[in-house]
Length: 77
Image 1 (cartoon, rainbow, N blue to C red):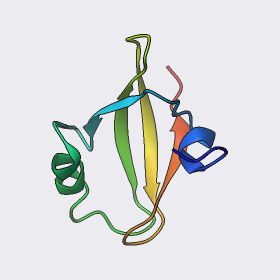
Image 2 (tube, one colour):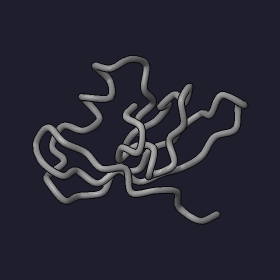
Image 3 (cartoon, helix red, strand yellow):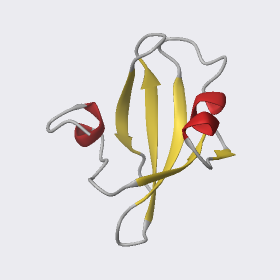
């Protein structure tokens, strides 16, 4: 993760693990890619992140381009 990058600005921390994307459980990088298939630029996708302390948090990812993403931040609640 880049210091002051989109992930960090959106709430991701070093050691976080993505466990769900778009309602699909993630097992590896390939499953993350598969979860994002068909998502168009500008659309939002839900993420579930497990932090190093074991707590989970729901975030939103907005696709910026075919190969680029911007983490939009935590959802309330």
